[in-house]
Image (tube, rainbow, N blue to C red; front, side):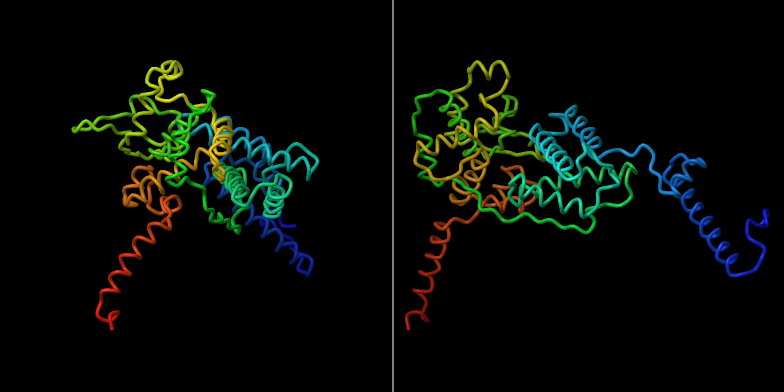
Length: 363
């Protein structure tokens, strides 16, 4: 062994193989050192040795890292994150923990143990054990994907386990109220006051297009009057942080006036007494049953009703609808604003008349 040159002196097959291995190891050690320095990480012989032999020090667990993320989000609630967004991350983490307990018989696994097979098994678990539909399962997987991207950014893992996996949402024809159904609910009188309140909040959303989180936080400062005395809602959306500008239709304005001095509104300094999303959805199903409406109503169907029945059907352009909904792109609006059959019928009637009157059709 030549200590100065760091190689075997004797020239035979075994020594050549050993010298080749030594040179390969030296090159790998130099690369590890260069990578650590480039990333601004500590570079000690112990760290280099652990990297060389694949020993991970203080590797975080998936659930541990996910919980840290959720705790940060909770501290930033109503600042950077809406409550419903945080709730979705917490539910995702709970599903993930139950999956790990069932499959691996442990409370947590290392971040480095997450691979594509793990993710595919997780998708199967969500769709079979948790009975999630396709889109719900994909939402949870996308939440988890964000967590793994954060782990990469913090140098906790080096390979993205989602790198070759593509997920697409299935097109869903969301329920919305037609004009008759909207008027039926609007004019219905209920015996219980709490049902009337839920109905009023829902109808308000149908005439403004506000999402649940936005109507819940709607306060007097969000109401503006223009030069002509017309009232507007000018509010930054919780979810996207984009502004929505909505002229108040008479039906919506009357509901605001009705709850102007409501004790809850005065205490919370909000415009409407909005209960939790879960309770409101439960009451909306009761309202639909009482009104004989065979549709699965939720707070979000009000947004679809505004886009389809209240605006698009009344010839409001999709560009204006997009602005009122607070969308950053027309493409986001298209999934809400479907062209209803009546619009197609009216437009085609004009076309039929044109062709009927043309000389070619006459002959």
